[in-house]
Length: 449
Image (cartoon, rainbow, N blue to C red):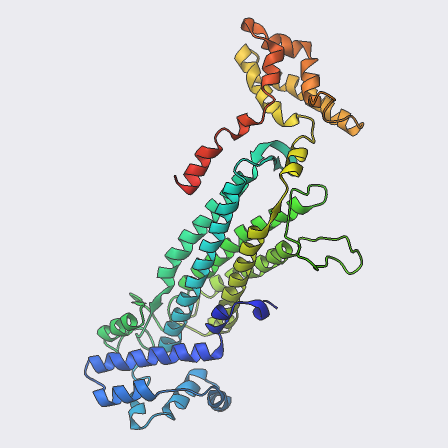
């Protein structure tokens, strides 16, 4: 299903034509390298580079007999050449071609993912500034805590995705590595200068040391980076799903004209995109474990990794690309409801201000333990009253918690010590601006000046 909707740019990097094209690119670079070192004559080098081609149907036909895809490929290419074909694949082993070619595919694919991540961050940044001052309640354990803004929520997303961007850019260097070191990696049949020439020609670095394969910790790092990125993307999707719940309804996915939510219930508007993203992220994470298990191959290598990578590399990149594009669009079109956020913020009758009262009492000489008891006993009254159906706000707009605190003579008396006005102190602590006073400073740290 993802393959059906994935962008053509990424899909084309992993189809059979791309695979064999990458193999041919490596083989041509090898021919050019041997030519530079004086082994292959100029005329033969020119013929190979200009005329070498493959035929996928013919490769399949040959592989049915040889049971070896690289040999089938070289045989097919040789059929497009003359006597100069003797220099094709000269002095190297299958993994030299395959691993170096896969490095090209991974490099180009990861560049697309990096651009996807940058686009995602830009959209998050736009929504963060749009809702920098949009009040909402912060929740821990799913329970109302203290006021925050939706912009702060987005700022956290932006900062977190930024760490993944840094990791991916670093990993791009780690995976952009090739090898032309031969069957056991000892460079016995290919001089080290050749390996460096070939890799430089392809825009890669030569692995400092290799056996028959490029070491799979590089691949594992890549897939782990994608898995971690997916975890953060799922975190965003889950938050949106929670915010769209009917009881919360602080944000929802854009619902287009003519869209349907349920075959049975015409009223439904479901968070289908974020649910889809959640599922895709689970799949992406599942590729990390087999990638790590591929690190431990027998001796200089076996091919237990090969069958795994035929799945996890194309599927990992294509799925991640699709997921990121979908998430970017979702956030860009996300419908936010500030009025509902404010309504929910007042839902608990002012309980969100409890810590402010708690912090005032130690200033008046009250122990933290006693202060906690005083503040909590009034908070428990609010919970009970809300359960009994009392309104969170009275006709004057005063919250239920404020009413109980003002009626607590012990509390008012303690806060009135040192000549203060206990009642006014309590009232002054019930304002939202206190919780948003450092939003600008946080934004500067996250987004820069």
